[in-house]
Image (tube, rainbow, N blue to C red; front, side, top):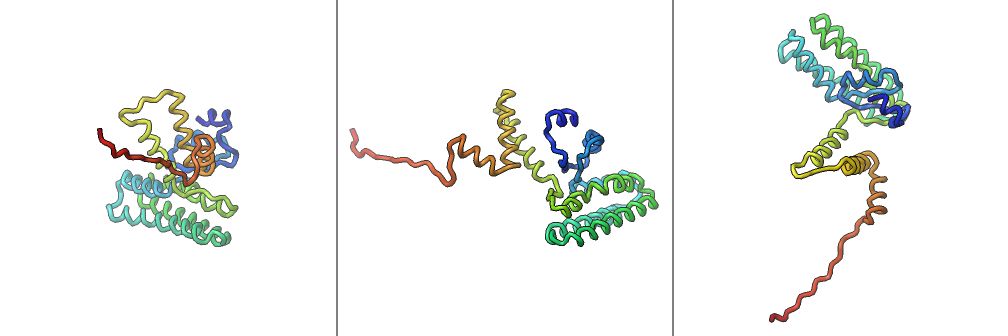
Length: 214
């Protein structure tokens, strides 16, 4: 997959992939400069699952640890969102969060939760990519909601019971949906220019009624 994207020049050198942390996806781009941001919500869910796999703690203890990770990362998210101009504070908060995750991983290892500890150690850097990039003025999402909504719409259109797509037709509708989600202005220009649709335009009709009845 990475080779195909490379030869088609589909990703720029500064691209960042926001995903659920799928290890095979990360491995596919391991020899590139591509950076990753793990969806924070998926990060919380993954830790919860790893804690369950370790089978060392009670449910309430697992919830407490998951909430600890949530508190760390959501506090960072709030600083980036609401105090974006304070780069120094963002940098300090990133360091605090990374230190907090390292401490949490060490505690989990001491508790025998080795899968959970390994998960945090392996993915901690990908959980704060969005904050590090914001210091340089680059804004990326901290979740993959937009792509999940996009895939939901694609699924709804192409898997409809009565739909039958040719390869060319399917590629066309997929391109239109992708542009609409990723570049609304370009999509609007295409819609208006190519499809002859203008903003705030409506269809005007004139109706006449003949009262003569034969």
